[in-house]
Image (cartoon, helix red, strand yellow):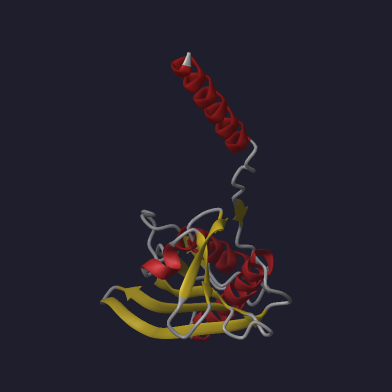
Length: 200
């Protein structure tokens, strides 16, 4: 009798525990796409430009949003992430930006057609800076190299580091991603001007 009672009590407890676990809210993960503003169309360039894939250190290549909360402290947001890894998304965005701005004839890596310029981009920083919680900022930094190619071989035309800190309206994943998109767009616009001045 005692054995049956113990079994009954255990069964009730297990059922109750299972019922409680079933009532737990499901983990919701939000995906965000980096959206850049449309480029301004400038004088049409005729030179061919090949944009290589972005490289990035580990802290700028993950899909989870990254927040800087102290001088040496960064926190990853498991529940809010980019739809695609930032280096992958930005490579396509940079090609579309240069083509839309008519900086030149944009080619994909591996194209059999000849190219005049090779762009080697590196995403070095991408995070929301929450060290001053009253003045949050989206931070974007890129190290971009422009290589010229002609009959005499390849030569480095310039290498520049571009960095933007974009004020955010509020501390939120949506505002962080929007600010990062604006910062990336500003960097692409400056880079496009630099390419034009380089003789495309």
